[in-house]
Amino acid sequence: MQEFLWKVVSAVILALVEGLTEFLPVSSTGHMILVKDLLGLETPPDRVFEIFIQFGAILAICVIYFEQLWRVTKALPHNENAQRFFLGLFIAFLPAAALGVLFADNIKYYLFNPFVVATMLVVGGVAILFIERMVKIPQYYAVEDFPLILYLKIGLCQCLALVPGVSRSGATIMGSLLMRVERSAAAEFSFFLAIPTMLGASTYSLYKSWHVLHYEDLFVLVLGFFIAFFAAYWVARRFVSFVSTHGFGIFAWYRIVIGSFMLGYYSLRTAAAA
Image 1 (cartoon, rainbow, N blue to C red):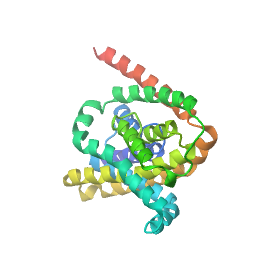
Image 2: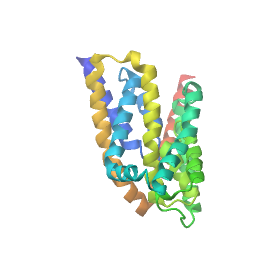
Image 3: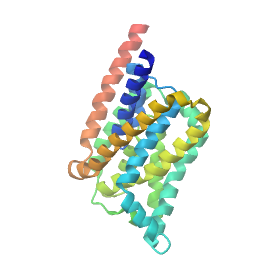
Image 4: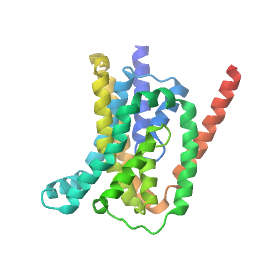
């Protein structure tokens, strides 16, 4: 009974972390690595649980933007902007997907550790502050109006997020800002790009991890799915309007503070263990 309760507690905490951070430029993967390491959390089957909570976060975006996505989908046969948007979304998805399939195991082996995460949180925070100061007058205000080359450039920026701690949304949003995309459009496209990217990565991971899925874990998986969904829904509903008014500075300073604290903590822990 005690073991089951610990699974439930771990599931709740990790699902909240996933839902609250997935669409913010603070790195959900990095936060998951740090929280697991600090609290010793485990939710067997570990990888499958992460896939389920990612599905929950994806569903939140699909629900929030259902009307817009459905409108663009219906217009696909006869509307040039809709056709360009879907083609552009596919083009933006490809670079990170290809690199992920080719190098996922090596990336996880060499880079998925708390020190890399903490370092990249700080580096990414400084980069956000720097980019915010560089932002010029926007040229693109609607995700359907991007030229195809812009979709590709944003997709290449997303490749940086293969390093834990960088943040998928952070890389795509900051890359978009550098290419003169308006803040709210940059955030929205980050959401849309998350759908094929996360869905593809999660489906691929689920295929590879299917053998560790057991019926006794179903409650924890479903619980995590719904908690991640509601947390992501709550964040995503407010994010675009927030950054349109306040910018991304608060996320940059959050990254710098958390990353610096964790670097200090791990340095002390390493020195104590020596």
